[in-house]
Image (cartoon, rainbow, N blue to C red; front, side, top):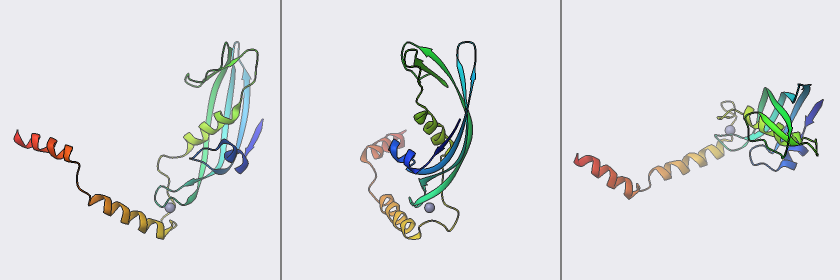
Length: 151
Ligand SMILES: [Zn+2]
């Protein structure tokens, strides 16, 4: 099976991290004795806010994941890579599972290439952080510091 996840897919999920993208997901299913192994091959790119300037940036994503799917009493996806679906329904909704894999494939730190950030925004953010640094320190920490100084 092959899924092509486009802007409409990401918009329909309404998540704050990824609002747009174009990702191909190839899914293969192998039947085991009492379960199914779903393998996901994820290739594409998503639009996420840059860490440095908050402007949109293109982040390539590429990952290979797998989950084990079993039939059970009620739905559960809390186990490590194991999804239990109710036997009566026998249907698995892959949209969130695929989203979680895509979100995991986005590096913790993602920024534009040097020089491609929104310069105005960077200035504004720098200004903001400078002002914050100049603020008065929390008096509770001052008290703690004083206590240490006494020793
Ligand atoms: Zn940027």
